[in-house]
Length: 129
Image 1 (cartoon, rainbow, N blue to C red):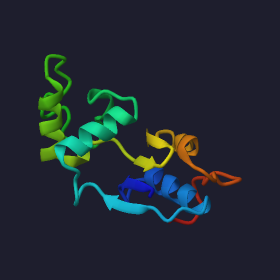
Image 2 (cartoon, rainbow, N blue to C red):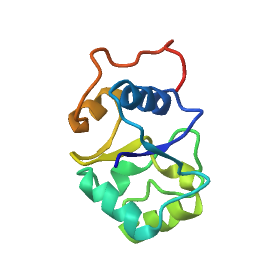
Image 3 (cartoon, one colour):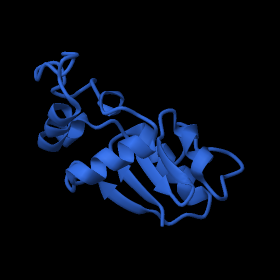
Image 4 (cartoon, helix red, strand yellow):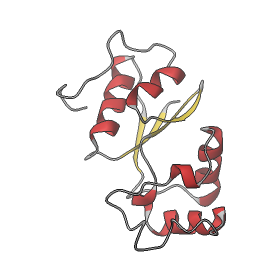
């Protein structure tokens, strides 16, 4: 089963979803802002993607600075608390397939975990998924 934590207004997220579909996938699409993962799932996906919690945070267009999340003394648990309270803080899109988990920034990272990657990755200007 392929799952994407998706933000439908994000160009990168839409490109990744299109690439999955172009590769024959019918992913479970989760708008993580409205249906956020629980703490352990969040922690596991971040670790499985080879990232630290801090690396999985999104700064742009989020309350990152207002919440002082740049403070290097904050623990992973404190950062996760912030993501759980404000899901928009999670970078996107995260994708999990049978081949692994990736934060797909840039979008082409999804190819690393696709069984049948598309011949031509989705590009800006392609019709939305």
